[in-house]
Image (cartoon, rainbow, N blue to C red; front, top):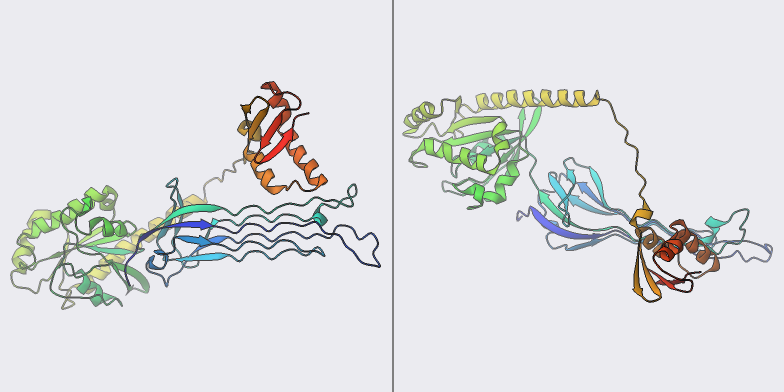
Length: 428
């Protein structure tokens, strides 16, 4: 399957169904009263982590995703059916961004984890909902709200505990094949790995995910070769294995090979070099390997694990070292969580939005004034002006913002027209 690690989608959640006006009409119930049911809520669009997915390929050609609308209310106080939730199954490690603001909305890191990307619209009430002791026969009803809509960008960053980095032909695929259940293509030529390969390795009753990243080349951090396409996938790794081939056939300068990869990681992100990096010299079984090993030791003066991935030589010792680093990281993370849970929880008071501040009244003609207000935009969509009760309720919303008084302060006169999102209201 082709690796697709980034794509754009337009999402539209379902709109809420409308409430209705209805009356109970039965021979034995002469004054049955209001009988109109509520609409159904619109369907949400929910992202969900799925461990069976490993690419965004399925969403590459899905430019638009819609959730189901809620049904309108029915008579006999029967509510309309709610819209069905639409699920977007995503591989673990997927980040969801708002394409318009570039805001990170969610990181999908666990199987079964869900995030409501677009919420369905709230249903409108029917007239049975508005019955009260002072209004026993209301003609009030509401339209459902529109569902949320968003343009999003999905970016996949593979989740792995251990990332293998190194120049092409360092032997990463051979090592992953030797220690895990992954079976990457292996051959004695460069750029064997064209996509990252994930393998699960059992170490001391722990299952660690290893990621075999395509071989880096000089200039990868600037996008040369496949650099940017794959360097981003190592960002989530907790430990790195920097694999270096000791075989003179693969490189005429083993020290330069080491420095190329280190410099590319640094250029891409200095944060990568702060993570544990285990240096591993591979192919010790080849002719000229011991001489290259001595050159490497003299130059970098760091602990080097020597292995032959092909012959499984020194691999167990390497796995033990990886587990030690992993164990330290896990204990550190556990302590951070413990300290965080002991902190004082601060409850912030939710600020009410000031719709008066949002209000704008603009003169568009000698006797016409346009109202701009998110509050009135919402209620204009919510309250259909088709009944006397609804008209009274809508005017109450206008009075809440003191729109007529504010228009008069700007020079409006009695008899002038207020334009409110398609509705025309006369100023008293």
